[in-house]
Length: 394
Image (cartoon, rainbow, N blue to C red; front, top):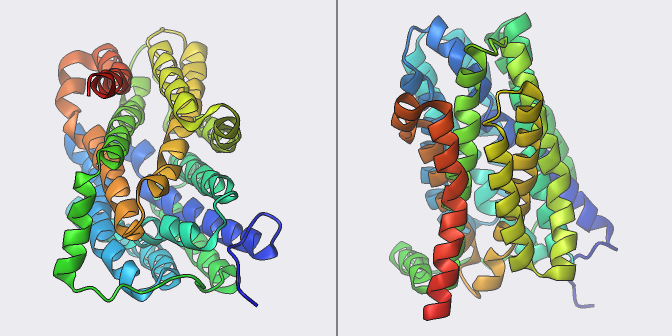
């Protein structure tokens, strides 16, 4: 009997979806765990704001390197092994980092952790494209990305809360324990690939296939969206703690960490976006998501804590709507080397994260919160307008 790709009617669809959701939850909790701790690092390690942001941006640089390397390897050696190794490699540094009192060593470990974290995103989207029926793929992808939002939210809130009440070291120990629990669940639940065909190409042929994607205007447009979305979104959240700890708000680390609960709107936004895209079209809903994100960002310019919180919720809703639909459209643009195509999109996406953490430091230093928000809020909208005009005139 010929095997078929899993649909939502199959039990294995839900085993795959839940496994990858758990893995995604931990990976993104670990990736962004230091974001609310940046003001604490400035004080405890006596480093500058820009240096403290390296605890995030170096992780992303390690992740980008890992996506390129592990994306190629997953095309040759399968998907599930990289997902499992990613979880183990991401959990171990959380046990080691609290033992060091050197910020330099912490940064080195975060760089290595970023490389390990890449195993999941490098393989997960390609795994879903191969194992899940096309009609059910948007749902699986949306749930996977919702877990990104949930993990990022819980990781930030938990580390912020625990660091204010206990210590950041204990917060990291707990994250490490969560990682090993998730690893055990994935080992038990995630089925082996059935439709994976290993690439027998040489490394140079793989590189040629990778760079072939640069001839695909549709895919490059999608990658550009990934860059600008994350540049803006990460920039807002990276510098929010510094804005909120200063007058007139003077919030504690615990109070600032609660603001990351706005990510909950990303958790519900991604599945809703998938459903709306099925009814009204992916492009339309994606553009609406980008506009909503910009409007939410501009709301944070008001000097009211409540309006800022609402603005952050709206920003998350718009961002995860746009991001989930952009990620799910990668597979529609390519017919081969899907692993490297997914990696190319994710590399672009995380270049945006890196730029949004450390690279825009001068913007924060020179223009403050107002200049930062106005600039970051309009970058995605301007990008979409330019690309629409380009397509019309082509």
